[in-house]
Length: 274
Image (cartoon, rainbow, N blue to C red; front, side, top):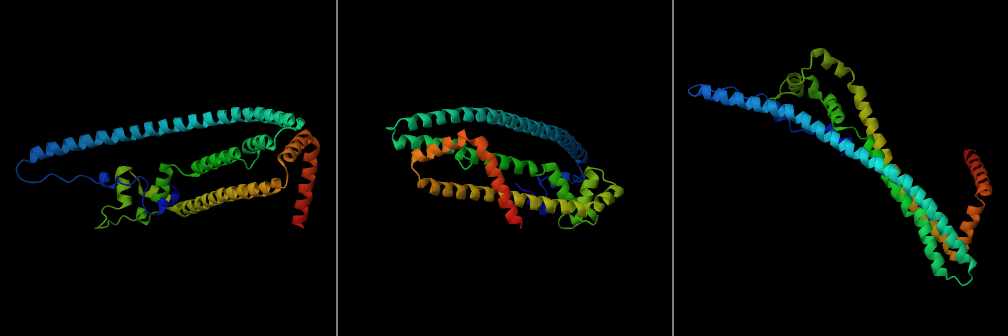
């Protein structure tokens, strides 16, 4: 989930009841048996608490290793795929050239090659869209704080963190629980309090950054959709043979065309600035 949960309840909450101390032994007969049972329960609980952090760390490590392996495979796959696409592009251009050289080549066959060319190579094609979606999703995942960081941010933001007054309904305050479990001192609590406003601003900045990223996703999708529609409108005025000739002309004269396009962009940007 996002970071919005930090303002209401702690990530991974549910441990509050486990943090409370167990009740004392009762009076009367059988006190010794009850004491032994309570002691065994405490020992078992202690062993469980000691094992839990280790198990959680092992799970986190396994997850990180899996994600790292996935990223490595993706990068390797992207590199191989780019080489495959370049080779495939050369093959499609050769096929276009052969089809154009044959005056009897049907328009439908040329159109089929152009569709493959668009999906794999054009920046508004399906291949490019999938890559953009993958990297934006990875960026959002990497921007989100880890569970430990969210817990720290949530804890520092709580008013009750800085109040030792117990709530008769809610039970022990967050401050008293952390003091018992972690061993926070008064000076440490005071230092945390000094950074509270700054941490809250950082959390707000993170919310805004994530909102901007999601806005970027929508903008990219809309840009690609509009561009694809415009290109379809332009290409509908031409025959498949004319489009193929245009593609081959641009590829053959790229060294001459790119400087002219760069100059045109600079002129257009200069006009916009004025």
